[in-house]
Image (cartoon, rainbow, N blue to C red; front, side, top):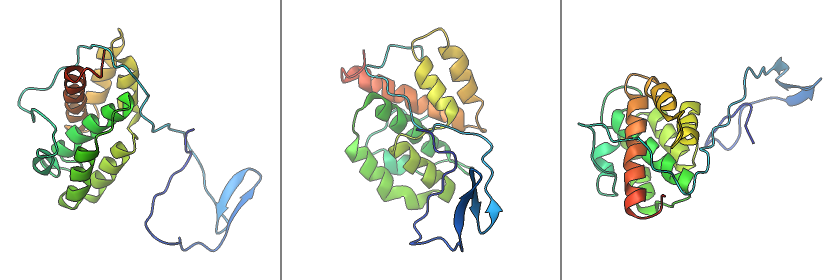
Length: 183
């Protein structure tokens, strides 16, 4: 079920006076909270994953393993470093396939302090199987005629983020096919 407005916090409580619904509209301290759009952040379930044209990007990390995570988290520039985006794609595709990755997950969590706050949260989202809409569209399109357009839409996200997520997904597909988990 899509969440119309989400807020994650580690605070024990938010400093709000009142929260109430009036006429179907949420009000926080008498201020209306306006929802502009709904976005389903879940990665679509795809098991088995089909064979696709998705291929790793030359020059980017060649694999994701628990030992490789330390070299990926925080690697690159920007709000979401390239290495983190690779991990997001890899993690999310494993979630889509229903394949647990406890060793990689633990390594990612252990190294979150090495990246930006935004990127650390995106990695946590990927660990929960939450993705940007363009990634969800790519997963849905895998193995279909719509795959190239979905891949292009994802690679258009950010400066390198989309390309790195595609790369991570391609690495995951390759690993899952090798392990016999994907079709």
